[in-house]
Image (tube, rainbow, N blue to C red; front, top):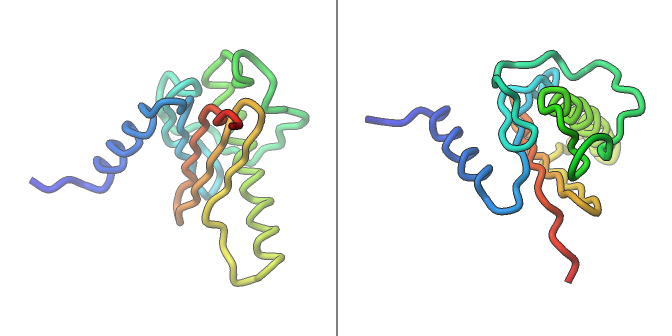
Length: 137
């Protein structure tokens, strides 16, 4: 019996979420930034798609909320992070295209004092991994 791409993708996401230091994973729609699936600290109680992430989010900072700057209300925080990631990715893509019109974004990596956020774009999705920042050695 062959496995579908969706099943394989879910297995990969499950393995990724189980890695040490990974706090959360998000799969966002590349069209509007809505949450398709989330795991970890930002996991929603239901993995149903959320509202589009194109609305303005004002002066929201990644350090608002509870431990690790991720807050305590998972649904609200997942949507907040999705909006910030979608906005950041849109700006980074515009920057890359401004540097070279034929270029495309392949990976974004943002490291803060507490977290490391890795964003991998796909033609239809954005994969977001939030993990503990490796300590400086």
